[in-house]
Length: 340
Image 1: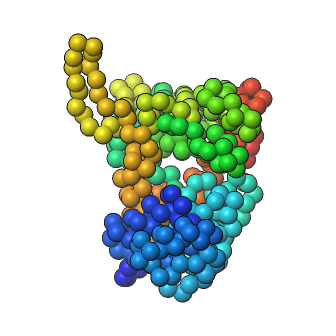
Image 2: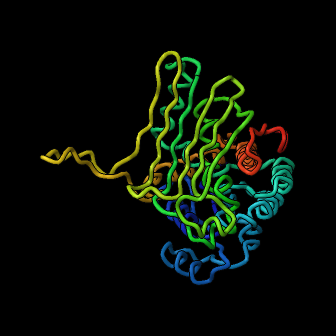
């Protein structure tokens, strides 16, 4: 399309405000047209900060606004699929934070609405746009290490989320591990056929009382024969721990933690460096910017987004398979949950 892409952001909490700031100040070829949030205080603060006059509590006003070309959905998860369907019906392109929904039936309805309207849908798996993970994927896809044999992903948060969030998030596998499930498919370049998950409550008993776990290891069997392992924890006292390794017959590619500096202090007690970046917005700030730039360019150049609705659906299927595996203490094929 010619000219700037006009975008409305629906949901201006922590991640929505980040996207709104990027759209307003850091992304080429776009204009931030409107904002929406049911939280009047958050909406007003974001609108004032970014100088946006079109700020409404009802998202439908943004979706139905003739001057809006696309919407960025950062609302609560239970509203995602409904807003996707409404936006598609109005002819708007859609960027939606993960997950699309916690109900696979609603996900399928939303994807059908997008297909029928022939609009673009990109799901917010931002880690694919991190420079280090992208380089790792390119090394694997380019045959630098040969056909992958083993995958290892470590993903540990610096501290648990609020219990109010835990209760509505869908649980560790659908909230936290879902990013790692997508990264596993992305890095190896093959679909996962079977998972086996073990875990427990090792960080905070209140998380267990809320019906969730805070510590898990999930093994993966890929269609191409590779084997993977993901370990998750809700609390790493030293910071946001994000590492990955893909091993093959020709070598391996490793992604290490990002630190605020590379200085090492050596003294009589040892060698000391800075801990990893503490917060996900710091660690993945560059990737959030890159994924939104990609979304805008896909609209301008009429390209299919790299991270599709199908990618969003598969990650949810993997989350349910992992949870079923944990609950039943057995390997679970993804086909037991839904066709993928």
